[in-house]
Image (cartoon, rainbow, N blue to C red):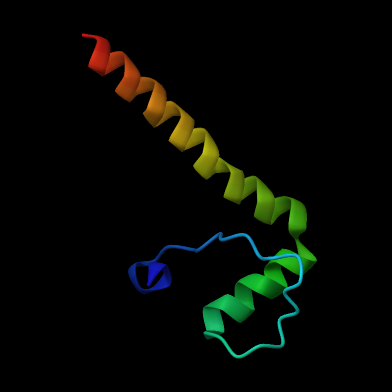
Length: 65
């Protein structure tokens, strides 16, 4: 889905994921990227948390107005 519109899905993998299960080609690609470039993968993944925190702070500020 995300890759269909030009995005890259940075979704965390469960600790027991092996990459051997059948899945989409993008899931397999991102799993291998995660295994080989874990720090870079997590850097991108954690951007979501920063965005979610910013949105929550803004939403709270707007509700107080």
